[in-house]
Image 1 (cartoon, rainbow, N blue to C red):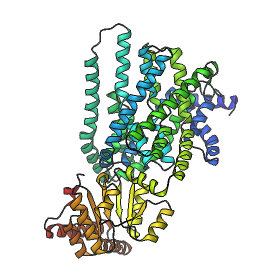
Image 2 (cartoon, one colour; image 1 turned 135 degrees about the horizontal axis):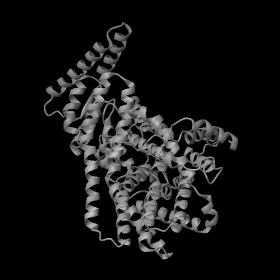
Image 3 (tube, rainbow, N blue to C red; image 1 turned 90 degrees about the horizontal axis):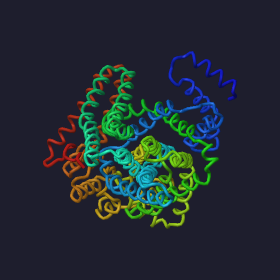
Image 4 (cartoon, helix red, strand yellow; image 1 turned 120 degrees about the vertical axis):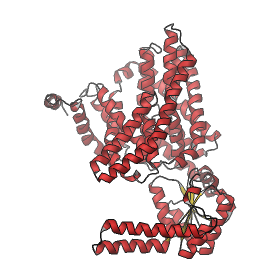
Length: 593
């Protein structure tokens, strides 16, 4: 892409009154030319986008002089990324992660911020500026780390859940950090400021914004989606999905929280609705494209001129906070009971800096809290660390594999089972159990399965499935699988007596857990409901209904009438079983776990 072609693009785009159209076109051309190379060498797409940005930016080939407008557009990619992550999670899984989010995440932000502040003060940075820089560098890149976890299929892994929990807490920490910058700026200017009232007002704004999204959004979004689906207009459905992500993001952004956090909450509100999969499918193309623009804009901002003049300082800062953060994250993860393997993996994933460091440090520089001579090398070190994140992730995966090879199978199993939280237990790994397990894995939902067939479990474990030999009807076996921390248990056993015994044992020992079961026939369905199953699927009935549906569609029967009749029969059978079983457990009575 030479100077002539760049000038031609600029001249052609200059006649089109669309903001930043020239930059977008150049970004897309560069991506189409360079990204296939990264796919060929199987390198991370995130690293590819960062390299493209550095290549075409003002400090590379200077094809793009500024990325300000594109960076703002790229931030929407981060918004959509967190929105889709919210869709993949649920309130149950989020509650199960609260110890990691508040405990481990809070400890990481505080301890990393304090230690890094002390390091910068030791090297002569004034206390106010050192505090801002220290806590800004304590934050990691939500966009880069989360995208890497999704690319590598590790989001549902234990190290992935640890990393995301800490990232979620870091997003929450942005508000107090920005408040701190305002307070320090007022103190430095000699103004009389009421620190307590300022912090209280910012906290109230944040709480109100989150409360509005969670309470009002839950009902408004569901109602709006039901109305839009009634119109059967896919364009309106897409527009509503984009609006849901953007409005929730703006709500938290206006309260001083990160926009990404609001989008995450918006996705979370839709995670348990019937619209979830269609919404995720509609958002995916926008997320991928805009997220690429975000990563490219980060690469564009890398000033190699500052690096050439201050390479010793930049790399000193880079090495210091990478080592300190990785040691602190790994040590805290171990202190919170995580395995050595997961702790090391999370430490390397979260060692680098994040996009919010630019926001916080830039605000502090504009207010005179941090000098420009200090801010520039710190921001460049942050940008380089973000570019190194994919490489750190690769190093972490290699180290994890080595540590895993050094551990015995029993040690690996105990570590993996001890870390499970918010997972699903599948009792029985036959044809139904295998189907459920594969679907859970595809949706990044942690699971563990039990079966009494030795050959079946051995074969499944060779393919990487989380299957163990054991009797699901024994409470001590289920305890080892962390059933007290599980989101649900699914009983798919073929043996009627074993299935009944398992349901009774689970309901007696853990009355609050959501318990789903498969029934062979109507009589078995009554027994499982009486034993305490939350919801029972009648195997023979479902096969009959699905087969009937295919037949009616084949002979030209009205689709709407056929669907209504099938749903009516399904609900009538369910009501008969619930009404006919004393002490039966309905869905509502067990959905509160």
